[in-house]
Length: 288
Length: 257
Image 1 (cartoon, each protein chain N blue to C red):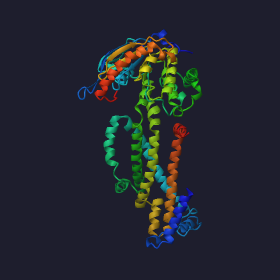
Image 2: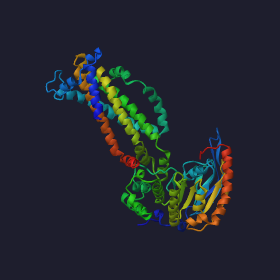
Image 3: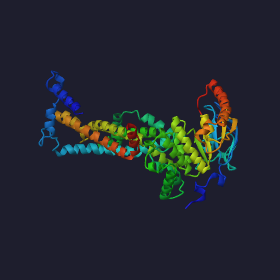
Image 4: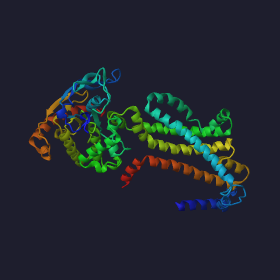
């Protein structure tokens, strides 16, 4: 019944996939005209199964980097390798695909499809299995993740934003991606919902151990969730600081209050504020 | 709702019978109209009981429906293509933006010259109006779809055909149906004018004919009939739309609750 290539029950650590190598990536918009340098010589090694959070001031290029990884945008210098295979190079980038599914900031569940139809969409459109098999797999995943099978036939418009986001993450996860790309997924949510979402995301991470590339502007969130926190500079964006978050897993409510957490936060805060001040003074608007 | 109707009819009656305004004296009063409309043997030949009444309704409805269906069959695909593919939009926009502002009635002489006979000419003019409304609203509908939906579908592995079926059509459907209702209303509008000028039979034709033959109560009967038929056609479209877009009703319901 289980097909190794698509079985999400096989954790990333076992298979060793999802190693991202960002090498001197640069992105210049409109080189002949406005010449906006969004990214400049970004280099980053993300081992398989790592949870990496990227923070930085608005407009620093975080989303640009994600878009390049996802295949929505191309780079103008450098390269990105996924498991030592070229993902984005000067010669061309791979089209967006289910090996690196994105979860979007404002939520992109199809409002005209039910929860179940959304979740199995990738499987059906890639023609991996019959509709019945896909629905079974979808219901199974929904049930295992907090009894979400009870909302399987609801439309996204009937759900809270927290529920929607959870479903969207499952829609991505069911395709057994090599990496999960999350672009400020919890930005538009209130604090209470956010805390709940952190719990859900970490549960999924602890269980499936996918490589996660998580963009946020919330430092607490970044340090709480990730193994590595990367601070980007303001435009042109490059890597300013890389923090090793050596907090034990599973992360709990007490983690946020620990001394180590505060130490890490201190290091990150000064870096972020420095860049934020520069960005503010230059009057940057969010473009990334 | 009934209060509104009552007041309107009362005001109408008052204007015709009681006000000393000579202009209103020639208009028929509500009572005369109703008596004529329900008369098995009407003075002027048209009532619920005469065959000709339904003949005129049939002609007008047939013309409106034909032009509407043509407009949808041509306009929706064109609107989708224009919204989806930039090149198509460039070529088509230039042409459409010049043709669209021409008022429908201005097309009547050209239509009569091109088409053999008044029937196709009237349908053509009505079609044009409905076509432009449909195309524009479809185009806007496609453009208004958040690009994140396209990206989500792409990274899940959707091919262009899948995107058309799973993102573009459902995403644009609300705007398309708004456009269809507008198109239906516009179609009736230009149809009546077209009938007055160039047709035999039909509600619009009968309105002008009744005026010429000094059969004033019939004018009102035709007008009210037009209102009913026009409303019914829009209602049908709205109902079909609600059926196709049940997901919308669900979320709006939640917001209201």
